[in-house]
Length: 171
Image (cartoon, rainbow, N blue to C red; front, side):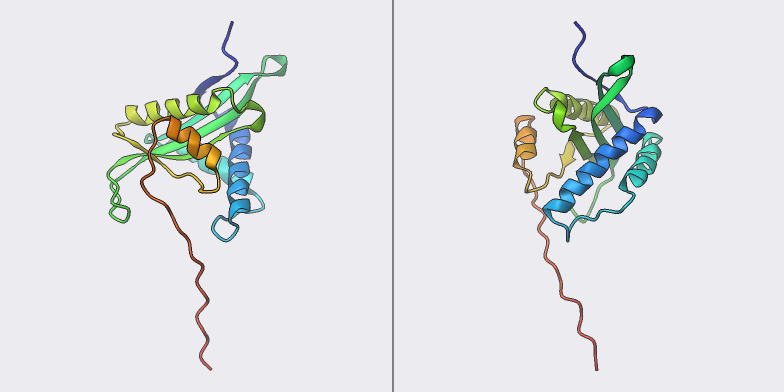
């Protein structure tokens, strides 16, 4: 019996579905803190262009989780995106793989899709020379934090945001 889903490198034809998932992720973050996370009217278009460019980046990994759909066509049920980033003096982070996006469609959750995407992303980044994977997880997403902890990730930093008052104008 074939597995209910497969994780593979994203193809050009996957980009519209991945862009919808990416925009969904951006909107979710925006709902959590609209002052910290931006959304744009055409988020899907921006994501599709960005992921198309990143698919050509030798240091990037763009994955699709797919399952058989109607008429034998594959249906995208999740995606992961990460890339190799150089040493960063600002965050005191050595060269590593950075997991940037991971989202599983709600109807496909709790079936191992997220775990499979994380493992495939880590493997893809390791093949590109990453000694470790660093991710950021929204503080208001305890379910995702718990999943990543079960997969061996440890907390290392917590981003905190403070709004600044605009400068006063001189009279």
